Length: 376
Image 1: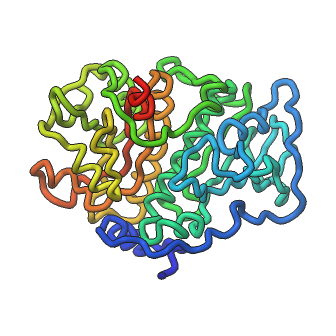
Image 2: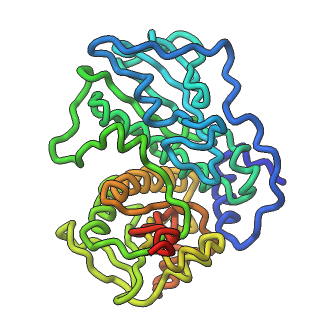
């Protein structure tokens, strides 16, 4: 197998092209250690003092494993392989002394790496990178889109945790221009940065964040229009800009693709016809998607996109789908992210120019799990 651990500018372009092809991955290989081998002894995260940013709670709500295997975490990951690593630069106003730390999500401990760099701002800055081997072990050549999506989900988990703890407004950065780190999230202490804009969406409570889970398939039952509209609106707001378009595939009585109208609340059809069986075939043959209540779709990232554009759109899609996921759960929906897509040229399927409008990420939605249907 070719080495997918490196990401030169031309390598990611070729990796995405291959990941979108019908080629199947080879046999599984060893994923290696579940946590990056940070140097030095592990340290507990102290209790936060008055006015300090509570890093123990922040990481528990965003990245920490809650089961012995390390698979169950607040941020979803393809195959529960969790390739994202977090290096923390801590400034003033935090429950850890200023410095640089590697985070161990299995033990919920940190490893001291050295002093902070000059000019470190108050609060914590999480630099997110990936150990690609974990995902490559199962997904092979299909891994790099999944690695980027997972990083976007991890950034969103940190973002939501900061808001739940009423910290300063988090600043997420992913211009796509760097391979390492892929994304950076800065979180000021409670009184050390700008506050959340009044017009932004309501924060989720810590209990909501700890309770989020990806519903096992299949997911059935069409979501109510108001709930689907809220999920679409969250995705559009979080996945802003003109590089991603958002829609949802729905079934009878009017099967097709719906999107938000300009008023931001009303759903309108922009394509007719049953799309879910085709989506099931494109999503690595996950047949259960053909009966999903609805499938939220992020699409864009044309075939001629450069490496920075690929990184940027996939990171943004992962971030937005994560926020859409917790919005769906707040509305009582079942939800599951879907990240692996092959030959999913949605634009061409709708009659537009080929190679311009690919499915990047998705969120399957339903009102119930099939097991519940069988009990009724």
